[in-house]
Image (cartoon, rainbow, N blue to C red; front, side, top):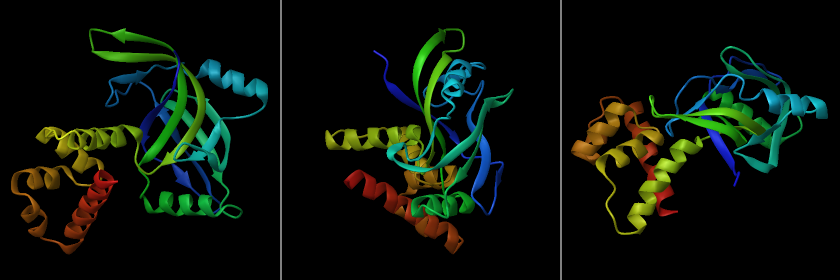
Length: 221
């Protein structure tokens, strides 16, 4: 059974203009993600050809919500690096797009994430990765927290709800997913709250505290 999936990359917008136009990559070839998936060059070609026949491009969404488009893509193609996208946020007409633009400009968004159906794949046993060879692309979203990170935090929440204790590694990863630096997460695991309290600079302490609040709110929710 084919189901819709998500694939995330860190948000690296090459340019962002005052009118809401931006360009970047919705996917990168040859890079293994946290689920051991690797997108192969050419994976999007059939899907992009199909969209071209329709005279359209995949949707530009906010957080993968089909009811919340925030702009349009004006160009989408494969190059040697990955899936290149160019689009425009409708900041003059849509308050949500204006909000997304502000976060993109401030650097507070976590990444670009594609919604797709996997058509063809192959397992490379020598490298222990899944090679995604054909992808039916539906949409490319701006997201606060990429799905891979959200899944790891949800796993911690699920274990706690079952009365089980997550492993230290899972908790440390969850802390990093909500904003802790590697050193902050490791310090928190070894020293607890005092590790945050001992942060030398107020800004670092405030950021760590806010990240901890975000994680706590998610686990309680």
